[in-house]
Length: 143
Image (cartoon, rainbow, N blue to C red; front, side, top):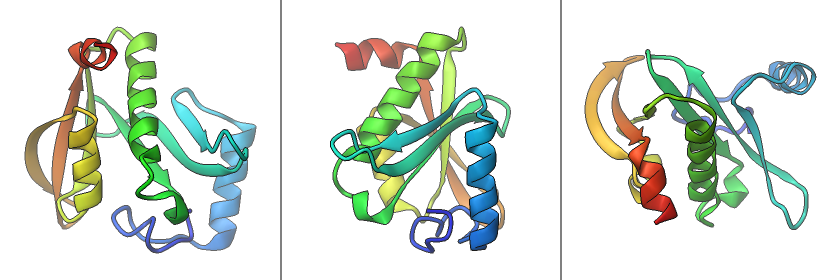
């Protein structure tokens, strides 16, 4: 995923293969709280990743899927599970997601899973969109 220009189009572009391998090895040997591997349960194939980190103040969820798995609802499922996990394992009431304004697919995914659009701002020379999940979101999806 890290070397695929389509997957990395809105997050800094593809990285060198050697860097990608080193980063993956570090994640496997030193897993951090809030890092997730997304797998296809029917095949066991790794299809993506997700993480929770403090990038802009509040906790932020990030995610990426291999291009071959786009459009199958797996991104929505992964984001929903990661967000639910976050609220189950923290006392925080807010989790955000940020995506480039140009990333229409990601904006639609976030809206589809119930994130609320909370504004726009410029970062990295591009317009960004901020979405928010509140603790009450968990009750709405458990509904």
